[in-house]
Length: 231
Image 1: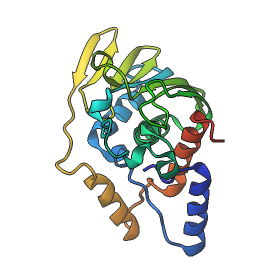
Image 2: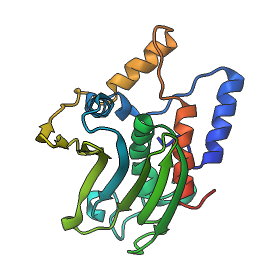
Image 3: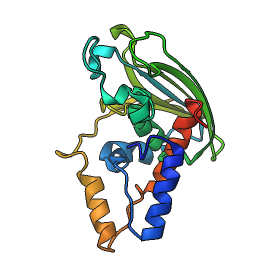
Image 4: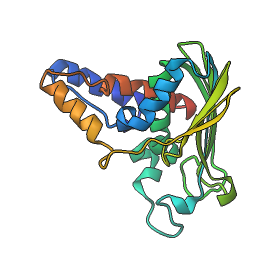
């Protein structure tokens, strides 16, 4: 993940997969983890009511990533190879989960910037987007923030309450309603990609269906490119 360095490259991959009959899967393994399955279960149960807004907030200091000033530039920060910077590396997991929960994003606008000037790629971004289900959302990503601003949170706001969860740190899922606050801890399996791998194998054996296909992953790249003004 992401499937490719651009939306147009994704289209070509899908075309070759269709022409050759060779299925193509993408490692959006978080979809299959019990933690995110629980998030989906809570939303679909109506615990927080109809969802009215979604917010993504992510901030991390440079030292928490693989960038070190004066060292060789990581491939993730070379847009000609990776498609973008850390946004193109980390945000796909968040966007894929959101589309898995609320449907395809049909409109997206972004405001990328390079605030710290540590490397060529963007390091700070804001975006707004709209799901096919009618839910509006927004996102804020900062990869050069101070330690005090460190955050990994997706907040889902409903008519009866709210739900917050992390994507990379697996903090307890927080549900707040008129009945109070509830923290739900869901442990990961020993091998986080195992549920996805099992799904792919069962798909190839014809005894199941894996939905982490290149076609589903293409919608993520479309959003990434829109936020970065690439299409």
